Amino acid sequence: MLAEIRHACAEVARRARLVRLNEERLADYARALPLERLQPSYDTRHHYLGSPEATVAYILTLDAVNFGSGYFPQLHKRPGLSGYFTVAVSLKEAFEQDGPLSAEALRDLSVERCATMFGQTHTAGLPLMRLFSQALNDLGSYLLKRFGGSFTALVDAAEHSAERLVKLLLPMPYFQDVSDYQGLRVPFYKRAQIAASDLALAFGGQGYGRFDDLAALTIFADNLVPHVLRVDGLLTYDEELATRIARGELLEAGSLPEIEIRAVAVHAVERLVAVLREGGSAVTAQQLDILLWNRGQEARYKALPRHRTRTVFY
Image (cartoon, rainbow, N blue to C red; front, top):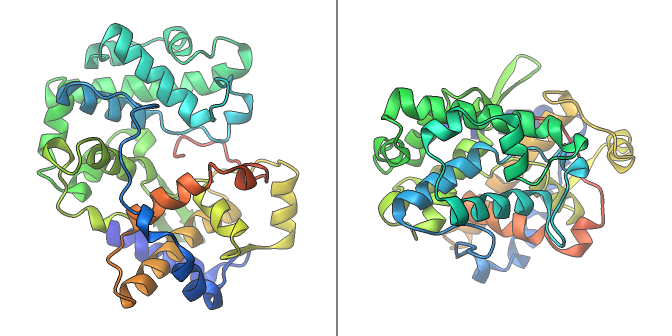
């Protein structure tokens, strides 16, 4: 299943008309990457860490709503925090103050309660909060139906396989991250994959965070990692597409440019992994994703507009 992502994204990159990977820059770019930063730690400043069971509940709950970048310009953000970190910290505080949300609580969570929890009671934030509440309702219902309401039972069912965890999350509609590119089925599964990655980080690769096939993950195709690759000169966008992004124009979910941006970024990092491995560096796409995503928090990347799409997939 994860191999299908790689194959499909490579084919999109081959056909792409609006987004191009600058192959001639791959070797230099790979050499310049700070590989000493490839061992990230779990960020407890912005993320909850409690008992093993509570931490699993937090991560699965967070990744159920780890989307909305196309809505973030309208999100009421906490001072100094991005949209994602606003969401992560709000959920962290809810867990610290009231304990983990049970599957029953998630199933029954109203839009109003969801908006209060994430600090989005203003009108502009409600469209995203409606999507968040539906995503959390779906998670709660799914856990109750398949796993007796237990977050850890879902992770246990993956049997230490990241790919199996991805498959277990896909029955929920908002995890079904698949596009159609001129008749080609292109899966991304961004949030399902990142759930395995987040668990691995939180548990240091042990216990509920042990996945024997973590290296099989691709990058978690969103709107930030492609932006970093573009700013760094590894990706080039068609002039008209670049102008649309600069104007802040929304790209339609599932449109040709939106698919090309995500797919060519996936393929670009796969090529980087191949180049680095040829040079003797045992790196993974997951590690490079975290490195590039964190690089995207720097001011020079934040200062430039990146593509925005209103979608439940990232």
